[in-house]
Image (cartoon, rainbow, N blue to C red; front, side, top):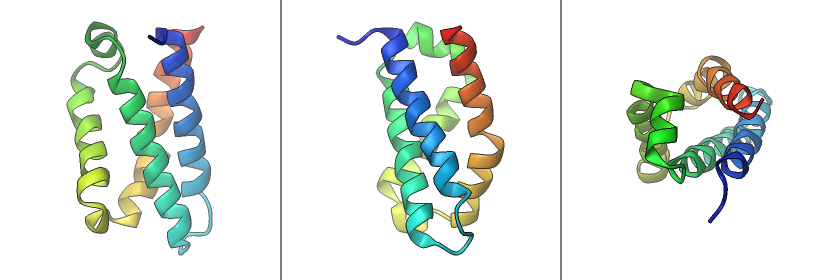
Length: 104
């Protein structure tokens, strides 16, 4: 069983790459796909946290985060590239900040 810190570091790794990929060329579908997969992987990693820890860190935002993961995983062709880019620019920085604060 992996520790909370190990899971948070793994999630941070995925989210950092997701932002990097999302900031690539605006019309690069491969970059959007890569960002989507890294977002999904980061959220899935956070899902392996103890639920009480996850709730403490992300509270009411967690269902929305898990919904994004489900949208990517189960409706991949329906994920709007602009939604991925906007998520990388507005939501992921907050998530990574929460993770970094927890690791500090």
